[in-house]
Length: 373
Ligand SMILES: *Cc1c(COP(=O)(O)O)cnc(C)c1O
Image (cartoon, rainbow, N blue to C red; front, side, top):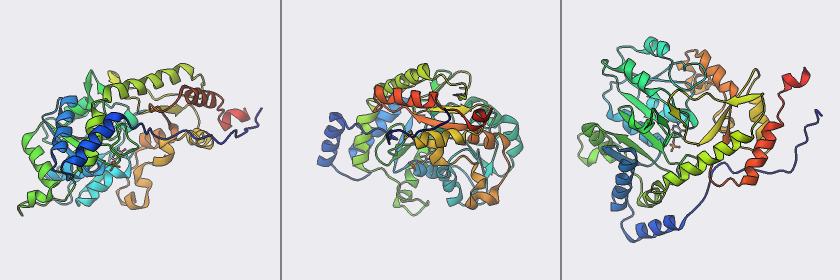
């Protein structure tokens, strides 16, 4: 019974690769026009993004990290100023902070979620705080309204890193409609793919101008500093085609999620609780081990060909990495949360046979501590 037989080396794909006719049509159209980041098709893509999120401004950029970098660079700051962020986010969110000569301050999350803990956030705020970043992981909403309320009146901007949280909702609105500036990634493993890419959304006109200028060498005017972080026309063409079909994509992911949840029946884990009023985007199913170390579950599924994003991102708070150790600030909730979790893919390429395999495999999981009992 305890014999764990690793059956047929099957491997579930980490992400989907469904190239459509519309993709090909838009790519062909892009090839016939200009190919640079200032080509018309980039503007068309940005217009479509504004429509989806009802945002005043959208700036397409070359990656999610570029989006965070451009957003932070465009907010008022002095060298050494502090940016508050949870240590449950990936290094991708924190390296832009370091690149700008800013200091990350790790704030703990509220129990069983990725949202900043209100008490610890108040504790972390200082006269040097220049921004707070919320990073909802794997499409699970966090209460950004609560965080915004704490920052209100302090003139500290709230940045949302929604690299994994396209179309995630809170109280009926997309998370992409909260905060002062929102950053997205469209890298191949994210919710929507343009291969590499990202975008920034904001309703603040002068902030939007600064973000755009920063991504274009400060408009080459020699007045403000910038880099070249523009998204190329080919990626924008793919984005344009895919953002138009985002509704169907979301429905497919949420359908896979419902099917899987209906089949899962193992008391060794549960789905991570969703904050009140929140709706996930079906990017991944987040499972939380009950009463044992979730890294066991990560290993178990990986050995059976079911990829885990937690396995990829590591199960430790960021300050336990060598480069970030100088910024260590113990965050007990973050630490126990990361150790308890795994993710399961829900992307539209999964066949129903693969979903059955995932459910059966997870239902057979028995944690070691329970095995000994
Ligand atoms: C992937 C990711 C990024 C970085 O996006 P890239 O497009 O890979 O640069 C930033 N933040 C989070 C939360 C991510 O998951």
